[in-house]
Amino acid sequence: FKRNPGQPGEEDIVSSRTHRVPISIGIFLPNGIGGRITSTYVYQTGRFGNATEGVYQGSSRFWVADLSVRYRLAQRRGLIELKGKNLFDRRFRFQDTDPANPTICPRRLIIARLTLWF
Image (cartoon, rainbow, N blue to C red; front, side):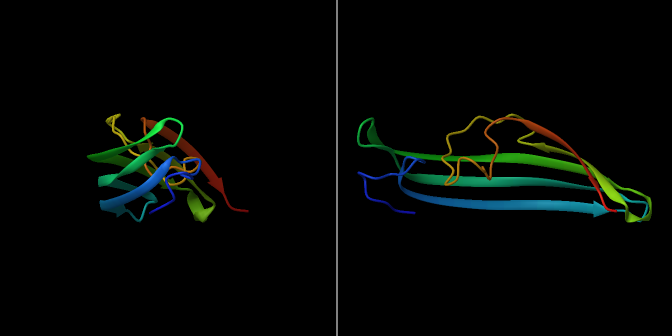
């Protein structure tokens, strides 16, 4: 990912190289219960910032853990899901290319979701 140093965009990324390696294990039982645990290794290096605040070189490497548990309702009428992202509330320096839709949660996040099909 490279840009002109004078125009780093709203993400404040001049140049960046990011490697993500997710390792995941899932189980889905016939009674409708399922789960998944994912551990993701992230390594990012690059030049960040903008012309007014200054551009700096930085790098970071870290692991994050995510977990989800779900239950499929009878007759496949829907799903109930509980999901935890960045379970251990790991702090890190990471600049996402789309801050509005982050791929890695910077703080612990717990999500409950109900999906129904009619």
